[in-house]
Image 1 (tube, helix red, strand yellow):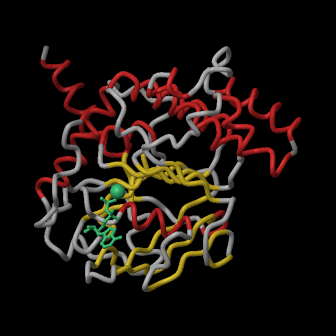
Image 2 (cartoon, rainbow, N blue to C red):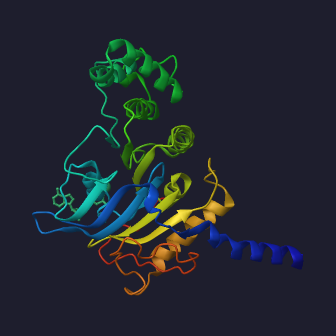
Image 3 (cartoon, rainbow, N blue to C red):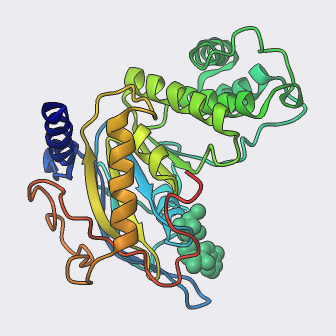
Length: 311
Ligand code: ADP
Ligand code: MG
């Protein structure tokens, strides 16, 4: 009995090595975010001093409470928001506007209601590939998201999860270098969401796309992310940049994952002094400094609802 308790306790002690500060690998940096700040005209300081390196083929989750600037940062990566300070470059080139190489996906699948599932894909693809190749790609990617046999249906004849799968198939078929996802599964029921998590993990393992995925759900971030970038609000900034060392595909009920999610939530609940949470103002700041041990982030005053709410 004692031995079992000891084994359990030492197992718990070993867990933090599954969550370590992320290391910058300059050689394969895909997206470099440098001291990015953004204030909206109304005077809201949405982002302050955000520095981040996203590597080729990485799945990075931006995690934070509502209003912490996740969407603003994602739009800045997409080139749809021009940040009021700092720089963003992709493959060494400054982001100056939208590009087909960066595909933005939202909660709303945004399908044409009068087009069939397949036509929705073909429409998006044919300008670049021509009709024949577009049809071939549509069939291939609908298969990838397990929608064989549904090609001729209209969006309203599908479930919400299936519509999201069409949207994902379209995004993948467009073959962008970077996939930017803004809480895409937020409107789905828990079961459909879990299914989407499995599907997205499988597709990501096959394609190794660079993905930046925004969420306020700790468990979702841990199921999907190679890295979890924890943000705080007012002004939006990076608190922690953590590497998740759990093999894919991940099971949301994996006891290690549940424990890591508790750890991150505690980190956010207990908070820390501003010194420990210093805004990251340099490319190497906070990277590679050993294990993530201390529960040390504070949910800032004014956060609309804490990270992890409803998880
Ligand atoms: P999140 O996606 O983390 O919820 P957002 O990036 O949407 O956060 O918003 C960050 C802050 O910027 C919030 O305080 C929000 O009210 C504000 N904001 C977002 N978009 C606009 C806008 N177009 N004009 C003015 N303020 C905005
Ligand atoms: Mg948002």
